[in-house]
Image 1 (cartoon, each protein chain N blue to C red):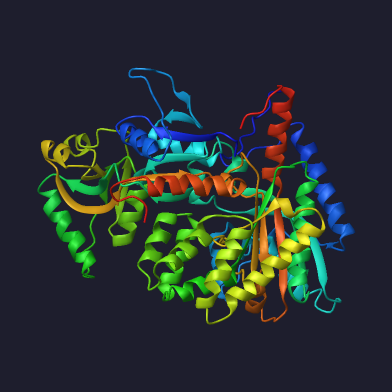
Image 2: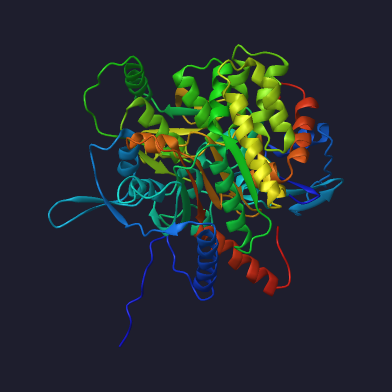
Length: 350
Length: 226
């Protein structure tokens, strides 16, 4: 009997021998570590009901996602974002659990490939495939910046046990960015434009916005350096120097948050893996404070990301603070597979 | 980022300007005339010659730390790279063009849309281009329905052969359009050469990255930097 060939979509391919084993190793290692750090596992369903009455940012995420129509004409959405689902569990089934509530989960998210990624990539794990595996951790109800520190340290420790030694965590802050937009005296469309340019890493457009603002001379240079160049102490020094122009005090607050995260990483010998990137903007709009993205050479997309997202909880009618991160398992499996193949062939490409 | 910085450069008409810009920034790259080599080492840097559309691919994947490429390529491909500096040379523009009388009619429709006037429904315009994303974004922005036909070159032929009503192409002087009986209806956006960088390199080697950017900013003439 002949077998019907299985055709995967262009965007998603199967894992072939050695890759599932790598994924299982990474997943179980990270899960064990998170359990040891006090996180308990929850399982998040793949589908959620489409709710046309959901608050705008959540509905927009659902609108952008893949939808299925059930036999009774009910519409369900394939999960676009696991953080939102974990937050719903924390505010629902686990609302009466003691705080801080530390959860972790693994699951599949379904996202249309981002246009910035699909045209240049050569393999699905690099281009933000439609179906990707994530492993995430969240802390709900933790007070103050010590929770940011706990999340950043957990992220660094998770990455260090994946087998990727050469990773870098970039630490940014939405409060710092808001302070910069105030210093530049941008109106709402201007703020959106700046955020969009930073998301595209279009520093030419950012430079033009800075040059067109009421800020002049060396202050322009400070803002530019702060937003352009991920670095260690110099970005914070630039931010300190700029803080005199920030009436709101948000820049000082952001600097203190970032200092605390850097100190926390130093305490567990992970400081060398961290740089400050005050131009860092996350694609999802619900982040409100410290944000993280992790990179490794040879992979054009982040291998992990997260941050403080009190804004998402506010949309759900809660004032509870929340911070978390997600590790991109498919990208990590891809990197580990490539590294294994290269070491077998006796050399490393860049 | 490796100790040796690697630049990806576009082969073709922009290469000479790139080499001048690199030399002024302290990166001398001697490429023997007529050579078919595609990778060179010279002084503190390594250079990769690639098709212009491939330059961002080398940079985004980390095979090169920096690259020089036209803004047109970045607009079309949206690669995940840092776009650091406008180097000023290689100036051109995206233009919408068509033969008469389509050009006059299309100019009227574009003007009406810009003025917020309602136009009667009409069949979608057929537009040939090498830049489908730019074309799609443009027509969506002004609200004129268009069927985008992607070609690899010789766009001027498409209206003459009845394949398309109009084209969107990169135009420098406009001479090719005129010689093929096409009138420019609207300039969509300008493009010049940009210095781009790999995202990981910017963080893993921040001081080096800053030094390279600074060298380009302070040693260029013309409308370089911001």
